[in-house]
Image 1 (cartoon, rainbow, N blue to C red):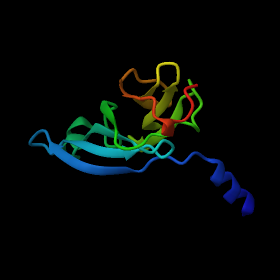
Image 2: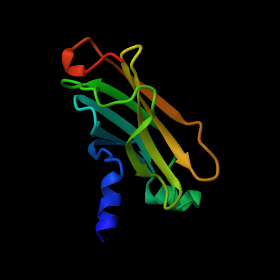
Image 3: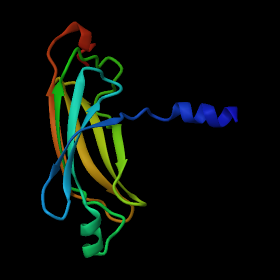
Amino acid sequence: MRMIAAALMLLPVLAQAEEIAKVGVDWVGNDIVIEAIHDPDVGGVTCHLAYFERSVLDRLSQGNWFEDPSNSAIQCSRTGPVDVSKLRPGRPEDVFSEGRSLLFKSLRVKRIYDAENRVLVYLVHASELSEGSAKMAMSTVPLGADKAEGPAD
């Protein structure tokens, strides 16, 4: 039991999404959901993620019960002091993941620290088992020369 608990502690802590709005887009009941995601490892950065959520009627008419589209959009902003001292430049790290189908498909947000240009890059993309998805969106958060942000490299 202790080994299982220890293994779970090694897994990365992913951000929790907070739904802030749902926008109806048609009479069938399809919606665009907007969620706020606070980066758990960087504090001071909030990303807003928008994605399409299919209604029950749309699922019945399309014949695909268990899957939502991969389309998404992301915009990230600096919302407080940013500390990048624990990040490794150039290494994509998971920030958020959410299932988009019953099995094998998820919507993921990854962070890349571009130390040379002093920018955090956030990439949202779909992850599928058999075929990758080219549907993606990206947002950047420029970093200043604040001392709280850690070393420049």
